[in-house]
Image (cartoon, rainbow, N blue to C red; front, side, top):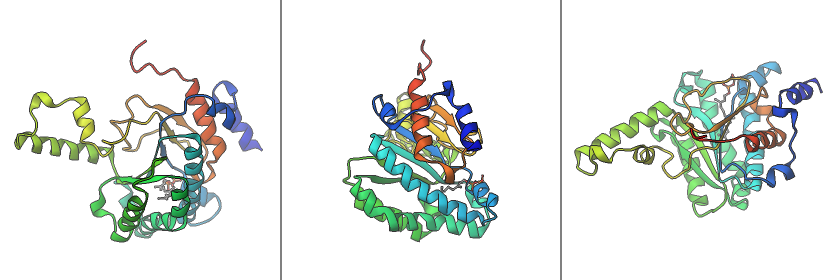
Length: 256
Ligand code: FPP
């Protein structure tokens, strides 16, 4: 109850939104989420950190379903960063098993919801079993026309931009590109998000206010929404609140 009251007090304009209210206004087309706080959620319960990741996986299912129902076009989830390899071996191994478990359990439901699974990140260092699970899901859902569920897996924005610069240099050297042809639009085409629009809304849970090397280029004009709620506690109610507050903001893209 106290938690709820604290959350209520933090709401912009103290307004609480309903699913029906947010559905009646334009829904953000692309929502990106930094799912943070799994470890703290587990520690608070004297559980191993991986228990928090497991609970967090269940939340992914709930939030994907709601996003799909609301008509969100793309949901990008930061599941594993290029920096997360620094974690203890056991935790890394557990995190690398989660996509398999998630897709093994929920793929039929995702297919039923017309969800298309995608991945962005550097696939080379990802264990084969993880990659195959994701690739299989991508293959099975490639014709789906509903929500794109885009997992950022072994993803780092600086790595992505560095790789894009290397590809551009190669294409200049082999004559496919000229220096004059290099523009913001062209650079976007060399990023891992080339087929996606930039996120409209970024959500980060757990009270941290930083980007942690996530979509640095793509978030240039994105609206940010932060919550103290830890990812395993993130509910449909919070997603609706984030969208409701997003709908009240004025986006000017540098204009007036
Ligand atoms: C950050 O919390 C979370 C992660 C590094 C992993 C996120 C992964 C999931 C939520 C599950 C992914 C599910 C699928 C389907 C791939 P943290 O561990 O840094 O938390 P802390 O800051 O409290 O320690």
